[in-house]
Image (cartoon, rainbow, N blue to C red; front, side, top):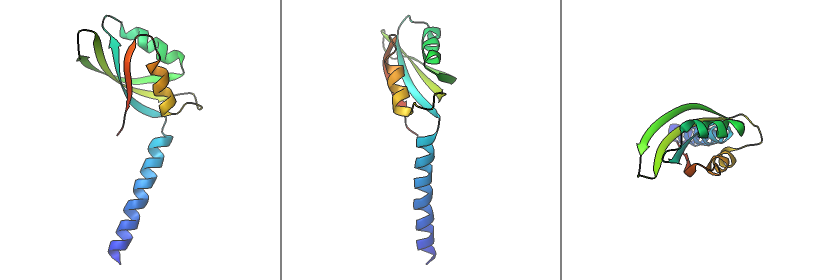
Length: 103
């Protein structure tokens, strides 16, 4: 009987966690910028979309053409979800590659 109770609790907590992550306004994205493009250009473009950058990790150059960063973003516009926000960042002219990082 105790095993059934533990199983039900674990399944419920997993579903609750998934729902919480989907509803979260904070997300991490991996972004590659064209080499030579200042990070400030990306930050200005992201801010103009209603997305706040909370943290930046410099990953370094992946090739001679790009430079990688991990950005922690907070979505300030309620109509934007994770997918839409990542698509908006990917459309920025200086961005070569953008992908949401799943936990």
